[in-house]
Length: 425
Image (cartoon, rainbow, N blue to C red; front, side, top):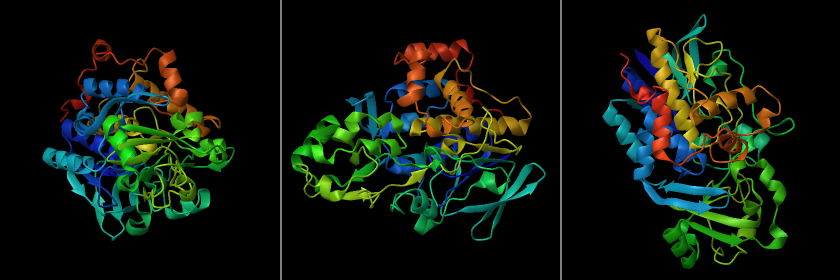
């Protein structure tokens, strides 16, 4: 069987791995020249409930990408405001590692290949059309195109194109494949009838900061500096996509993390104000280049789906990552992608779909975010293991733990150990 994955971010890579392990022929079509998308400027893993989810993935047989981020981590078990035991992977090393891993598995990688339309027959997709006019057929399709772009959306809902790592001007706009197949997208909101949300962080050039800041960052992974009282802006927290960082501390302080570059934990911050802070007098943004004015706008294209990750209304189309809900984070993308890839093969074979039980964190967030997406209030929230509404729920439901043996035991009691790594064909 032939599985076609549209989008090579974290969720697309995760879907490719589980589909390949299950026995499918797998091809990824990525519109840019790199895998991982926002993962090239992200870097935070295992913080708060993401630790639980990461160990669940490993126990379920889909821990490949977790092992790669662990291997490439610059700092382990660090704390910063609102977050415990975070691991920070090196954003400058991770993409080639993942690319080589997928190649060695025999996954077909296609770069600078933008999918623009589908061919349908009834309620099934027969194939996809590329922007160069070529056509590719397949048996099952997984859409992991994300929810950011094209440039017009960043202009309409944000402060214009922020010149981010997704590089729409160079590689073309994102196209919603589910919408092309006739399924209407859902949109997230940041306020009543105000769509989308700003990406939650920026990257600074490490060499542009004072040497004492760099020293502390590289030794501890974290640096915190007070913002001058006249520049504190609590209202800006409302526009952040990453609600787990919408805490007062992130408005009153400049919080930096060492992910290879310097990760500045704010959506954007005026350069003239940033350079007022001691040690930041020569600070320079490197992603997005417009970090002093704005950031990319996300959550404008979510496909309605069931809890097995299948898109409603199209029999052979699955989705994952931000395309599958108002999820925030790499771990969340890997979780949804891993399930989508596995179920794509189950669908082709006529097997029952795997729906992960709500007695584990991954199964619960997939079902909970789906339920909340159907409500007006729910479309103004974001769902992540790392904080905000869902991490509170994790703790209330006793799903959060950092006890690895306990997590393994939970998965084993459900007879799910290694299930996402099983050969089906």
